[in-house]
Structure formats: C-alpha cells, structure tokens
Image 1 (tube, helix red, strand yellow):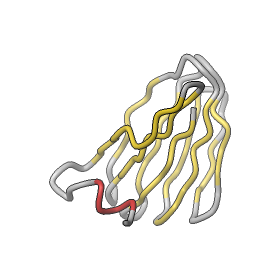
Image 2 (spheres, one colour):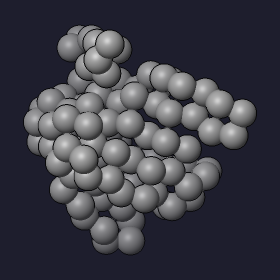
Image 3 (cartoon, helix red, strand yellow):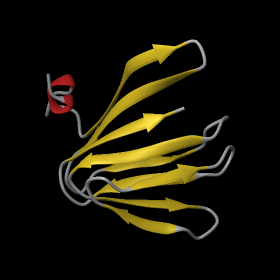
Image 4 (cartoon, one colour):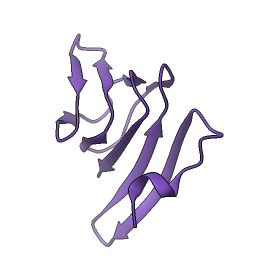
Length: 95
C-alpha cells in the first residue's frame, strides 16, 4: 500500500481520514503542484509531516517553513495557517 494511492489527481487538494484511534487520528493530505490548502485553524495541536514532494507552510505568527520529505512542523491550536504545494506532495496530519 502507498499513501499516494489514497488520492486521485482530479482534486488539487485532498484530505482523507486515514487512521482513527481513541485519542487521536491521522489524515492523509495531497496537495498538487502550485495548489493551496487555504488558511484555516485546528482546535487541537497537530503535527504535519511531509512524506513526498515539497510544500510551504505559513501561519499568522509569521512562521514560514519549507517542508521536504521527512520534515515536519508543529501546528498550534487556533492559529491560522495554510500550506502551498511547490511539487505534488503527500503529507500526514497527526492530531
């Protein structure tokens, strides 16, 4: 099994619940080249992990991080943030 097989190339941004546990969950996210996961917030802390590709993570506190495979960023609760695909990318969001 491969994470990229969870998504179709028909959607520029796709988020699919992948694993649910009693105390958290994992969402598989695909962001295609030059596409944007628009600004939003999360109610709880999260960890965004880049599996393949390249994305830019930005938040309202002025943080701007380029994420390559293996890189991750902590996302604080109720902080507006967005993610832009620089290349076709696969990510895992862990809450």
